[in-house]
Amino acid sequence: MQRHTVGGNAPAFELRQACNGMLCGMELSCHYLGPRRQTGDPGHRRGQLRRAAGGTRPERAPTAPSILGNASTAVVLSARDGFACLLAIGSDSLPELEEMYREGTPLLPPDCTVGRPAEVGARLARYARSHPDRAARARTLLEEARTSLAGRTLEEAGVPPGKVTRATHVVSGGERYLQAVLQPIGIDPCLGMLDFGRNVGHHLGVSDHVPLSTTFWRPAGSTGETMA
Image (cartoon, rainbow, N blue to C red; front, side, top):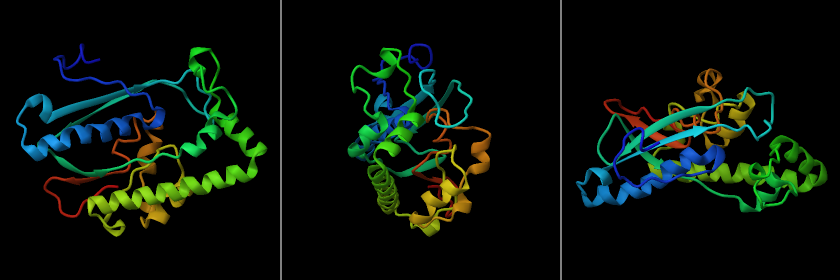
């Protein structure tokens, strides 16, 4: 991709983290750019970083009726000023839930290397039937971790929940999903992006950051316009 687009010899990395890949890449990019902005490094290569992503999932069975396809997006992050300012970004992990996603299938070799469909929805259903108590606990852990992460990131950004004017999210969710995600954070579910999401869909995570999920922007020239 680098060879056929921007060229040059800037460091290039490939990340494969499914639905979180693009946001993970953005978070790593911030750690790369941040120290150089603080030290005033004038170098072009160090002053700007371009991120792009593409996705397809022919080996994955969807969890609900879906139209499978390819998609790609790009984001430019820079240590210089731009039309918007990224105030904070964060992520978290729940390694104790890894087996729920895998549901007894071998960790190695990976599914796609041996022609084994992932069938994520079927695996989650089997896990819930086999371990109902664990499944219920997993949902609680996920909700608690998600709310805690959002609170910490909002605090880092210096933005109270009541000051958020728009909230982005996984665009395959519905109104019930928005209530479950945004209300515990203290954000009005009406500030969600359902109308936008209906025309875009969930392209393996390459669309959920348009605008960017779990990040905070303040458009240049505006007052008090903040997105979560």
